[in-house]
Image: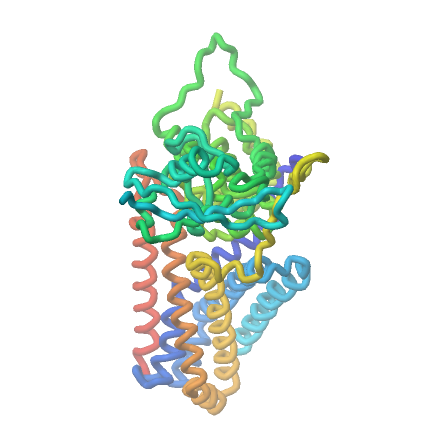
Length: 120
Length: 259
Length: 139
């Protein structure tokens, strides 16, 4: 394989998304999952009211926060899961299918998040 | 009654065997002996046909790498006493390489990959002899020194699952050595290495399993080298959109810097 | 020059062992790595849950009440408990590994990795407390 052009592979872009998503997931998801997934349903802590959550979700800052919260971790999953399928299951021959499923899924989720947040 | 320990050693003689088999040998259990001493004992006293590579017996040549109880190890640095006299010590050739015979692996693949990353100082302009040596401060040396400690023992290749799963993956040692030269202030070859490194068989094949760093006998931390290069390549990629001519200007600056 | 080396014409036959699909079960370190990678599924799971939550918010108070009720089912609790473990595993492995990509040097010497990881943990705690306060202050 010869020395290619100056420009590094576009894989770099996916890795950046993966890294950003990884940071967002690491910092934000634990507390959200703990509260909404365990503490509130199990009654360990008082649930915020619907009205309060709606008012929070309507603020522009919260919308931006929630968009980043949904979009970036999905791209983190897409990248990691894609490589797990390549390596873990050795299904490299399904390259294009895996790629489309993973990044397509992440894109779909991102679009859905944008749509929902726009309408809230 | 002298203490003994049993070694189960992989044998493969291509003219006789279709697949490798194991053969047990009983060797004296001496507390100062390493696995290599046991192998030499077997070859000298028991079975002269046992075939394996070794040289310096002090952990610097990188020849004696083998799987010992499933772990990639330098056999000259692995003490028998670590296993206890009742344990069975299983010795096999390094994983993920073709086996030529017994404990000897075919390294040509690795050498091709090593050559691909151009692990030597690349200069675009040689300074005339009269100008003297290239100067390097201790801080500049510190930037790449860790990665220069690699002895090409290929233990990291035996540890890395991606090496096993993808025959074209350049691999930890080669990538770490490329980074050793990229970070050396005397080198001007980063651009030339970019094509091999920032490629899906180069750094982008690595999923940061981290096993390479764990097994490295010289503490090179190839995983760290690769992740650092990923960050650099990613930033370069971003820059290539913002400043399309950025790379050529970069080269000019580096030439002036190193001169 | 081809990457793949092959024996020459009169060379003895090399043995190449095929890597099993279950290679990752062979060693604890490999298993730990795959579990770390699979934590991304827990991450995606919670994002999907959040999307459902946003949709419920959008559709009104009864829809949201139904959503909250579904979260209380034993199945959902179990799934979220497992997801929580995986997400914590992601956070800890992420903060511990991130310093390797960015060696920090101060005064010419390499800063030890736990000192580079520490601010990440601190940020995590601060942000989590803030989010907790924000969600708990008006029930």
